[in-house]
Each structure stands twice: as structure tokens, then as C-alpha cells.
Image (spheres, one colour):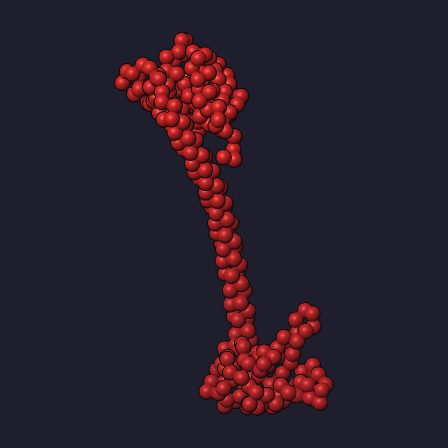
Length: 276
């Protein structure tokens, strides 16, 4: 047994306390004695004990009264009553009021009392382990509740951020849709990734739609001119036919704030717009 086991024995008869000391002499227990209930209460106010063995009939404060007060001070103790007073009413009172583990008659059987104490200690240890696990589970549940609330807050913030981003993107799309010339964008792999309404209308029936690759189309020649002969040009303007419409297309790099190339912007101005 790793933890020290303290047993408080309370009896107004010194010979009974001496007998209990002798009984547990070979056991790894610390035996503490008190001659009255009041003395026993003074002891457990200052010292933790695991087991309390108390006589039932004592002057001034009987065993049930003592154990009832002891349970308030140290509710985890295992409480045992010794008594030669075999009144069924007293037994019921002891069990109900003091929440007694065992009611053992005097004179007791040494072997049976030793087994009772061993079982009481096991009961105490199991109770403490269960209580520790319950407390740990409660702590973990509180932590999970806190984390869940934090997660809900983060999700709400993320949702608000995504909604805001969606609104911004929609606003950007509305802006380019309102531009009176056809606008499209391709990434560095030459995939078309954006376009406005006018581009969609002019390119209807062609392969110049979002998701298509322009590597094998006339647009590729325009894009290649941006880096013609290894020289990067700011923009390239050429005549081009988009669907059924003739016009001029302007091709230029899209740069991020760090001046790193992110993609290519295409602006097609059909002749109908130019001549209006």
C-alpha cells in the first residue's frame, strides 16, 4: 500500500482502544485514538483519516452523533460502529444519520474485523479514485465546452469573413461586368480564370470561356508577344477576331503589390464600340 492509512478509533473505554491497537500492530496502519466523540472531532479537524471506528455508547456524545459530525468534517471517510448494544433501532439510526459502512457487535471477531477494515480501505481508495476521475472528467468537459465556444466564435468570425469576401468578390465582378469592353484573365498556366459579361457575349460559341486553356488558340500568340525574344513588354496591342467580332485586344501582365507576375489581363475592344 503506497499511501499511509490512518484509522481513528474512538471509545470511552481505554482497554478497548488498547485492544484495537494490538489488533492492528502488525498492519501497516497508523492508529490514532480518542476517548470521546468531542476529542475525535478535534482530531479530524486537523488531520485527515481514512477510517473511523467508533463505539456506539459514549457519554455526552454517542457514536451516531459523533459520526454525523465527523461526516460533515471529512465526508470521504469510511465509518464503522462498534457496540454491544444490539438494538435494531440504534443500528438503523447509525446507518441513516451517520451513513455507517458497518455496524459490528462487541465483542468482535479479530479476523472478521481485520477483513472489514481491509475492505473499508479498498472502498475508500476506490471512492477516491472515482472522485479523482470524476473531477478530471469534469475539468475536461469544462475545457471542451470552452474550446467548443471558442470554435463556434472562430467559425462565426470565419463565416462573417467569408461572407464579406464573397460580397467583395461579387462587387468586383459587378464592376468588371459594367465595363463597356470585354475583359478576361488567364493564369500563368494560360487557363482562363475570369471574364465579364461582355466577353461572354462576344466569345459565345468559342473556346474562350472560363476553364479553357488558350495554349493552342490565336490568343496564345498574343500572350507570347509579351515576352517576345526574351524581352518583357508592358503590354501588347493587336487586331483579333473574337467570335463574330473584329477589334483590338490589349494584353498586359497583372502584378501583385510586390511586383510579382500573377497572371495576364486581356481587354478586347470590338469595332462596334470604337465606331460608336
